[in-house]
Length: 326
Image (cartoon, rainbow, N blue to C red; front, side, top):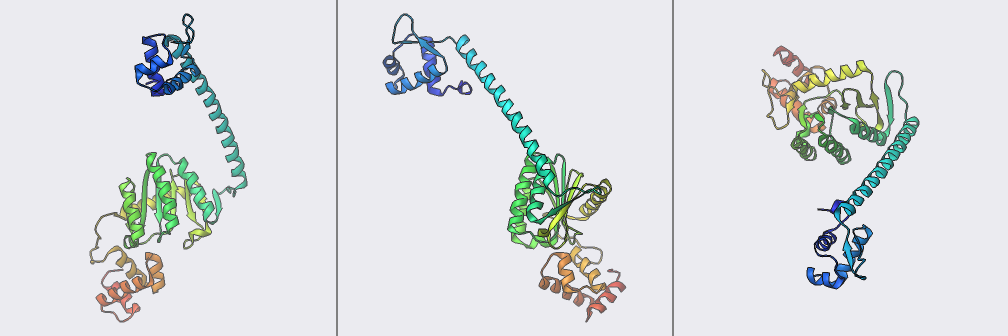
C-alpha cells in the first residue's frame, strides 16, 4: 500500500508491527515475523532512511515507530518536493527540446512562400513523416502506389501503431495488385485489424500522405519514392488533394470485399487496361499503372483481346469502343 512512498512490502510490514507493539529488538522482531535477523535489520535501515523509526528514549538499543501523522506526512511532503523538482526538470527539458527543434528546422530545407518544403532522400522523407505523424491529431489519409519494400512496411507499421494508439482516424488506399503480394497482404490485414480503414483501387495518381488536411507529403518522382519528396501546405493545394482522396476513396473496394464488375462484366483493373489499350498503351505502361509485373499486364491484355475477338491491340481498342467499354 505504501510503495509509492518508498516502502517495500517488508518495510511496511515491519512498520505496522512496530506501531502495534513498541519497542522491539531486531531479534525479537525476527522471531515474531519469522524472518532472519539480517532481513529485519535491512528493513529497519530502510525505515531509518525514511525517518519512520527512532531510537527508544527509555530502552537504549531498541527502536520505536514514528506515528503515521508525523512520519507519513514528512514522506508526503518529501514526495511533493521531488515531484516539483521533477516537473522543473521536465519543463527545462521541454525548453531545451524546443530550442533544438528550432535549430534543426533552421538547418533543414526551407519552406518556400508557395508552401513547398523539399525533402532530399528517403531518410529525410521518413524523418519528416514521423514528425508529422507525431503531431497528427484527427485524420491521416494515404495513397500507396505500387509495392512497398520490407523497410517501407516496417517504417509505416511503426507510424501506424503510434497513430492508432492516439485515436487518430487513418484511411489508406492501395492498388488492387497489393492483394497478390503476400508481404503487403499480411500488412494490410494487420492494418485492418488495428482499426485502420483500408481500400484498394485499380490505379492511383501518386503516392501521398496527408495529415489533418494541413500537410501532405508526395514524392518528387512518382516512380522513385527514394529520390525524395515535398511537403505541401498551401490551402488551395490541400483542398484539391483532399477532394481527390475522397473521390478515389468513394470508388475504392474495401479490404476483404469481393471483386466488383461493371455493366460489361469488367473488373476495375480490366476496365483500366481496356482504356490503355484503346490509347495504344504498352505492357510497360499497363504494368506501371496497375502496379503489376509485365507478365501480369500482358496476361490481362491478352485475355481482354481474346474476349473482344481482336488480333491486335489497335483492333482491341476499336472493338472495345464499339461495345461501349471505353
